[in-house]
Structures are given as C-alpha cells and as structure tokens.
Image (cartoon, rainbow, N blue to C red):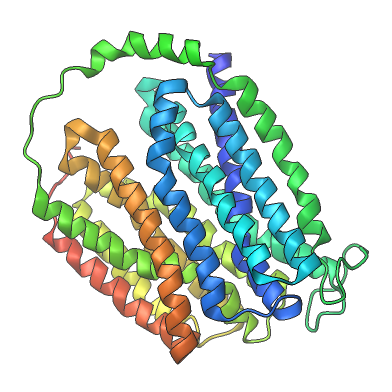
Amino acid sequence: MPRTRRLLSAVYLGHLTNDIFSSMPPVLLTFLAASILPMSNIQIGLVVSLSQLLGALTQPFFGMRADRTGGRRLGSLGLAFNVCMFTLSVAAAAATRQYWLMFVPMVLASIGSGALHPVGALHSAEAVPQRSAFNMACFFLMGQMGLALGPAIAGIMLDAANPNLPGNMGALVGLPYFTSGGDVTPIIALSVLCIPAVLLMFTSIPKTHEHHAEQSKRKSERENDAREHFPLFAFVVLGLIVLLRGLGQQGSVAFVPLLFEQKGWDPAAYGTITSSYWIASAISGLVFGRLADRFDRRMVMMLSMLASAPAFYLLPVYEGAFAFLLAIAAGGLSGGAHSLIVVMAQDLIPLRKGFASGAILGFIFGTGAIGSLVIGALSDQIGLAQTFQIVAVVIALAGLLSLLLPRKRPAS
C-alpha cells in the first residue's frame, strides 16, 4: 500500500505540475503581445489551438505505448519535455522577438503533455482497481487545479517583475529586465519546479517487467466482454455536444486574459480571473457528478450548460468583483459538464469504457483546440466582446442537444 500511495502521489503531482505550465500560455502570450512581441488575436489563437490539437492527437499513440511499457520513462520524460520546450519558447520570444521562434517550441511542448496524460490515467485507474473511479477523479482534479493555478502564478510573477507596467500591483521582487520591453525571467526560472515531479514519477511508476507481471494477473478478468449494440445516433449527438461546447467553453478560456487586458487590467488581475475560471470548473465537476448520480444525467448536463450561457454573455460587459463572479459562473457551470460527458460516453458502450473514455477525451481536447483558433479568427473580425456573446449561444445550444441522448437514471 505505501508503494501504491507513492505511485498515485507521483501521477497526481505530475499532472498538477504539467497542467500548471500548460495553462500559462494564454497569460504569457497576452503579456508578450503587449510588451515584447506584438501578435494578433489569430496568432495567439494559432499557438494555443495547435498546441491543444497536437496534444490531443498524440495521446492515442502514447496510450498504446503506456499499455505496453507502463510508461515510466514516457511519463516522466514527457513532463520534462513539456516544461523544457515551454521554457525555451519563452526565452526565444524574449531574446529574439521572432514569432516563429517562439511558436515552434511552445507547440512542440504539448507532445510532452500528450505523453503524460495516458500514463497518469492508466495508473490512476489500475493502482487500486476497486477505487479506480475515485482515483481517476483525483487525477483529473489535480490537473484542473494545475490549470487554475498556472494563469495566476504567471500573472503575479510577470506583474512583480515589471513594476513599470501601468496599473499593476507593484513590484514584489526586484529582478533585472530580460529585455527592454518586458521581463520574463521569473517564468524561465519557474521551470525548476518540475524536477521533484519528474524524479518522483521516474522512481515510482513500475518498470516494464513489473507492469507486464501486473497486467498478466489482471488479463483474465477482462476477457468476458460480450458483443453489444453500438449506439451510433447517440454517439453522433454526444460528439456534436462536445464540438459545440469545445468551440465555446474550452476555446474561449484562451481569450479570457486578453478580454480583460483590453479593459486595462494588469497581468496579476487577468491571470487571477482566468484561474478563477478553472478553479470553478475543477470544483463543480465533483458537484455535478454527485447530482448526476442521483438524477437524470441528461438534465443535469443540459441545465449546467444552459445556466452558463448568461454568464458568458455578460462577462465582457462587467468589471470589478462582479466580473470575477461571472468568470466563476461561466467556468464552473460549463466546465461541470466535462465529467458528465465522459460518463455518458461510458454509459453508451458500458463493456468498452476504456475505448469510450479515450475516444471522447481525445475529441474534447481536439475540439477545444479548434475552438481557440475559431475564436481568435472571429474576434479579429468582430471583437472579443461580441465573440463571447456568440459563445453563450453556442453553449446553450449544446445544452439543449443533451435531451436527444438516451435517458438513464442511475440506480440509487
């Protein structure tokens, strides 16, 4: 059991560390565009979109590798690769002010993230089979907390290192400027935070022969799958829901910092409001999951997305404390549907839950990547405020489509 706890702690910490760095680019790109490397909205969206898309497309391949090897090197080196490429991207932007020299390593960093996720999910599910659902929920919760912390950490550190920026919170530390336009030295120095997680994963995840031995003991328990009807229509509907929600909820978060930077907010403020968006999404997943265990899952998913639409619509309009409340409502209500979508996919083919989860998660990440690009292009044409109001309509439509899914009231 101590070894199992160490293994779970390793993949949890790895997921937390990975997603802290993976969620920094929107805040960092907003800062770079304002002070070091001018970029259009479509250029910002292209970085975020292709990063997310590459991470999504590589996960099935890395998942197969993890099944064969256990993923000790894959997971730990994937985390190290993600952080190193991210750091190289920041340094290249500050030193050269060349968009493509920043672009390439930042996009490639997502390959490391794509390697870590299937490894972490594999061991979260199999470390303690009788508690696989709870451990998997903890794994995703740590990732969500990383997504929540990353923007705030980046914003506060950039704010502290750039005391001459108008409207910021003031200098908390005195660091020399990395370039004349803005200082990104704290973000580069932050890369050392990945070292404990990399070492813990490398020493805790089973070696290949240990993984094979454990897999062979469980293989007989997984050979009783029966043939089942594939609910094509339901999967098409669920895919359409994921597509619309990805274009809205996931695609829009990359532009929350930019929305408030345009209002004159400082990096610490727009980093914190982005974090509040993710924190709400992390916590609400547990709440909506509990509700879905007691009531019709379709209705819970529909109401969560419908209720988020007014928050998205009003987010560009208000400032101050109410804007934070709207960000919490938008992120929490729309993000709470994430776990429900995965559960619905598992319900549709209950004897192939691994395939269902992998397919729907890959599609979720992919549509989120496309959403960032679409929102970047659209906002360049009509402005971010109107784009967020279109997002509200799209998410409401996704919620209504939930009623077309098969009814299932989980047994109490």
